Image (tube, rainbow, N blue to C red; front, side, top):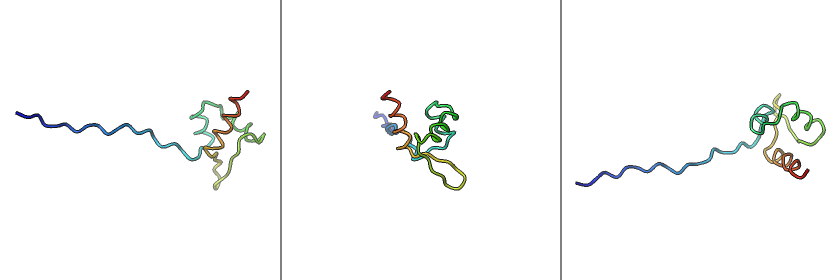
Length: 72
């Protein structure tokens, strides 16, 4: 008697990385307090843009900002 072949689970895929972050989602993703994000934005260290009333940060700008702290 032959056993039925069971379907293998599909390979695990990492969730897609966001293209941009809100202040709240950036804080949650990095653990950086919201106040520190606003200070970095005000000082020109973290670039942002607006769509409507929403303030957003491109993922590339976030990585550059975080990498700049890695050098110190």
